[in-house]
Length: 110
Length: 114
Image 1 (spheres, each protein chain N blue to C red):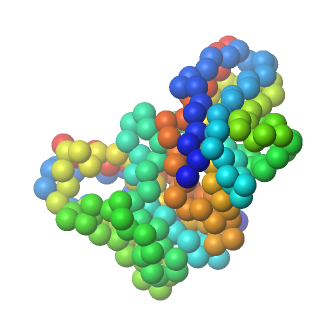
Image 2: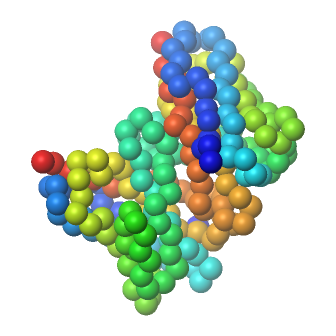
């Protein structure tokens, strides 16, 4: 399983863009990069998944460079409600033993 | 579409007492997971089911934990007897076989053992 490294915490203010970078130097050819978001008192929620280049949905964008050894989750114009823990996971699409790690705690302030 | 449903939401019990958690996965999801999440940490897998078969229970403390998924739909996770260190959030999740790294979680069952 590819090991991931992401910052423990990040602070931001409302309206700013938040970029969380995840390092996964030993990512395998068949591995996808998946990000989950977890609000306090809730289970994690899938937000985005990608293999290469850029993926965008209504919640976030995921940027993956050509070498795929890292990825950046971008949250545009955050609000207080984006305060959560964000987890970066790397593995094959049929890989059920994905490790969540401790994630990145993003705190958005007014 | 209904999400993963868990109950109870919160449970406080004394040590050595039994406790059980129930989960109803998303309709059509063959794969069901039970995770445990300690404070400040990410979820850790306890057991995975494919339909009614437990295909990976390597992380389940079998001396006190048990789980079942009768008829391949609902599942129950039991702890007997509970210990102080079992205080955690127990998360149920489900997914399709084709995309197991898109996992849908329930809100969790918060257990406090006193």
